[in-house]
Length: 298
Image (tube, rainbow, N blue to C red; front, side):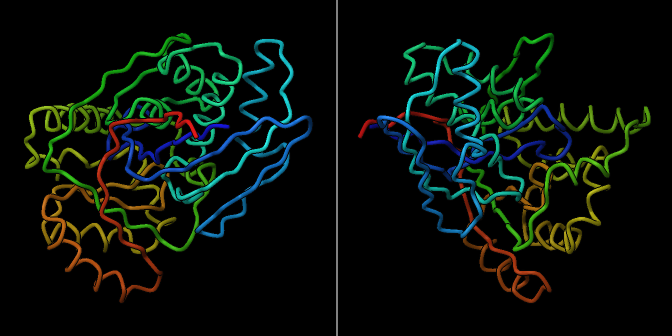
């Protein structure tokens, strides 16, 4: 018996569409036990999310995929899944399941693939590396999947920076959020995002957080997703007015994130504002996770 611990992730971080992500100090735990036959999935779910308990469960499907690649048969398994990462909120819940499944299968089969190799497999399953790579490796990462090869660099984060997660009570499916993005972008918007992506990475690496207000702006996806996330513009405006260094839509949304330095002050000013909005928003101050997915022996 062993347990897998996998972090939540935020992707894009403004202009870094499908290429920048960061692991967060919020985790799912999956305890694994082999049994004589069959599949048992037990969900311990503090947030009352509907998680499949049959073979359509994404963790189990990923385990199956790994075994099939090696021509092996999945043994009987009992999975106890304790989920703290909310689903359909733009916090990498799917990537966490895929990372967990790959890590579990790698351990059970004793194949000894490295985290980098597993991250590459996960990126090919997801189709983009921005969530799955930090889920495995921790920290903030910029990553590219080219010709089935994964290229990535970990970006050091300023120690004074933490992140305010504002998670609403309504979901937003990634597929729906992707449908509103235009198929083509203008040269002007391409330059806008490229320049801000470079500024974002440089700001993080040098610890100069004063540029984040500009560096986290985007024209590829956030403007088109505003109608899908009620109150997004008002929350961004308020967060910046009370000291946030930068703000961005987490992944496909609907979670909103503010990069902050004064945790207590921000929380005291932001909570009353969120409470008077039409939708219910949960505010949590969180740090990046530097560890990434790991196996904990029971």
